[in-house]
Length: 497
Image (tube, rainbow, N blue to C red; front, top):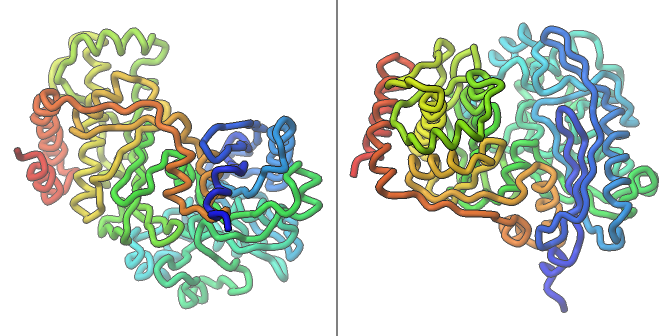
């Protein structure tokens, strides 16, 4: 009998990604080679706190992307697929899967007045799960808003963004995954909907979907969906995850203590832990991944967006070259948002600052590069303070990872090696997750399919040089009252020789 894991290496696996601006399909083989990809744009409607999309467009755009991606490959080798969507995006549908409402997107904030009732009813559960409270953009407050608007017709069903697609792929409703269900209040430890909370909020039990762990086979592609998408009928449909978790899988950050640091407009860290990481401050919260792993993470309000704010229209390649030649030690707090900081500390009153002299534009540019590296180090000190494992491999992804000097600076400040994957997009992560339906474990599939383009080793001399800069940065955050004294003390202990 052949080893069932071999199928993960021989097959073609599809990752379907629903983002804010596009729907994407990638076809990846068992060695990680992207054989084909295609995308179609998505339109949205924004007005004040409102952000909606047409759910039917998710399906039509994704079907078109699939047809294009599959046109030039051997579809007889396609074995499975998984779908990711934006976290907290929901709609209501009827018993046949026809949308009754627009899709309320991940950042739709109209449920502000409903959030208080949600946290009053479920505060103990949210505390137990480690995220302390829900925000207006989370799915459960938005669901209550929809119910108060009278949008739930008889027999209505709550669907997360990916649920609509998996329903259409299978031809009938299939369970949701625990990753998308997190922001709807699903109890990740007990693996059930908290009935007392839902009853208090007036959420009917038959409105809520069945939920399974990511990586569970939900069903197979039906004939109607096969005709619409070009995906062979009978292809396994695997329960996916939210877009941030999908990108983490795409980076291969799955072993205990492994982390993926995504540097885009803001900095987002996603890691892997054998246990639930609880944060009394509610700064870090966990998804439940496939198998027994937990995926803790946090999203900062600081990041590479400061470069477009303060250096708009300037040649960043030239500034990077000039900054690298200076190699200065002035450090800036790289806050992007005007609403304060949210990770690795919560401080609504936080504002940017610079420590040290920045007499030139390259000097100021370097101060922001260094400030992000120091903030990233503080994130890991905070995670360690919470008891999260942080000593595994670290991958760097996002737009900021394209700046090689910045990656090297981050490795030096952190004092640890960093890896740069070839592909780390959510669609690739879903292809890796889909490959587990062939019999391989998730770490095994990622080891075979996630390709590392480069690894940067830190310079011990530069780590020693920048540690006092980092501690000065920590001291300033503490002096301003934003960083807790206990966290600052933990950072100093970890920095001690």
